[in-house]
Image (cartoon, rainbow, N blue to C red):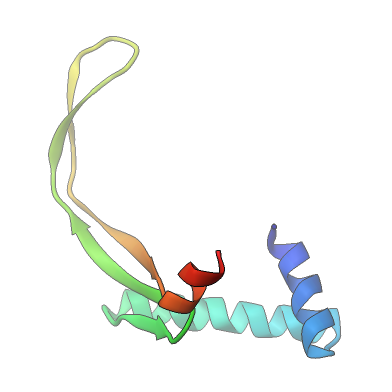
Length: 89
């Protein structure tokens, strides 16, 4: 499912227009992004939670040459599904 299909599904299930569903989805994504940027955890009961985790620096290999390369540390977004979502899937 891509973003357009998700907007269609939201509009149909909530009885909204596609424009309103898009505004709601965009606002939700923006709010989650802002919270994660601030270092907060976003928990949606029954669905799951988003959190920021640190991935340490490590040594990797270039698959074409086999030469070792250094991969810098960075922050990544982690998603942990909730119990309800896990049970339904």
